[in-house]
Image (tube, rainbow, N blue to C red):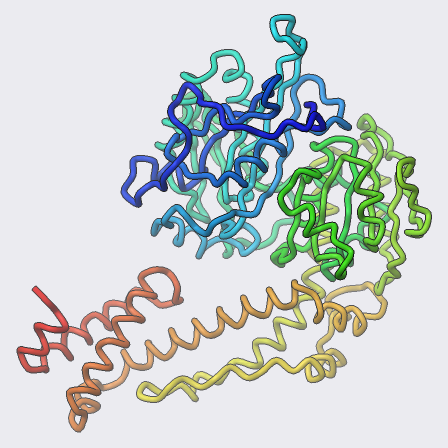
Length: 580
């Protein structure tokens, strides 16, 4: 745990093979494993080397030196966190050196049906950590210190924490053979296809999970458990693969949830200083989940240290603070990031029961370098009036000893309604920019999507604004104007524009398939006919790759069209277009 020793991380050979090098081929035996995890790492503390990467499994998975270094440092609590026993937390690192593992068809299929906030990360890795530090007289330092880390692109924090709870204690006792057996079991799991309930066997236990789908309707309460009468052993049912206990995470800041929601919505830089990596990572993940179903488009680091490769980038004073939510445990960051506009300092977590003392709003000027008391240090003035009824309902729930999952459901529903109330007017306006179906004709280029004009949208709020669905009063216009400058607006607009463009392309394909092909071909040259074949094939490939929302009947008709058109061409052209 002694990260301040100055010793850098090193790669130590483990029992499961050689240092990691070389990417897995698309047909490799670990294809199913790769649908869930990139690799499994074990990090230990070496008295001479410092944090050392003991093994990477599968051993042929490629990590750059920078990634190895980041994994080593972020897998151990720093010296300011007195973590004895077992603790779990997570981190998120930037992938270095470009995409190295080829994406399988299943990956794309899973992503296309998943909510945008749960799609796999294209440029970052999540590290889910189970760290153990216990006294051990057989070790020179007097302590056994080791971390088991699951590296994945999927933000399934609840699932991977549950998996680590089963695997890590057993691994720390039995070491490599146990880990190899677990990885082989994961390699038999079905792909995480959205909308399906899956039974995932591991170490004699079956984890039953539901993979969320973009077609799901937001629920206000915990999902219903699936029937498992015929399963032996009876499965451990996870109510969610990704949702944290929001009420527990936000207990010290319930009075300021709405202010924090605004900071997240506007992409404001926020430093979270917590007493441990577990509290830090849970708070950051809870904050970034506030905007669901809107995708969180800013950078965020659930746990971050001074050794991180992006440390200089995030702490520079030569430009405005980046749009990032940074979770840390080292008070040094208070001094380094004094120029940041928002700092959330959390104290030691209290035992469940009564509501802990709510942290106070404080001006940033009151930040002290080392002795900073818990508080939310910000000069931000909220655009919307606070919903006092929510806090009263949660306090009433505490008095009545209401279960935490019910309290979480209340809090999540409130945030969902807040986000939906804000987004629905944007969705309505965006839908009005779509060309009318009657303007789409088979043999002409589809019309363009109309441009998004901010002033037109703001004028539309008078008749279709958030006041129709949200009871909160306030400066909604001001909030939208600030939102337009945030990464979240850019991310939302790009995603919606992409979906609309795909819909236009699908409608155009349908129009072609419903047209009379023979009449069109009567006066067309061979060049024009070949051009049609190539364009139809390109769209067919995209549609089959789940990149276009096209019905199966349309796909069949498109294939038939291609056969008909190719059959009408001279033999030499047929050979070129359809080689044997």
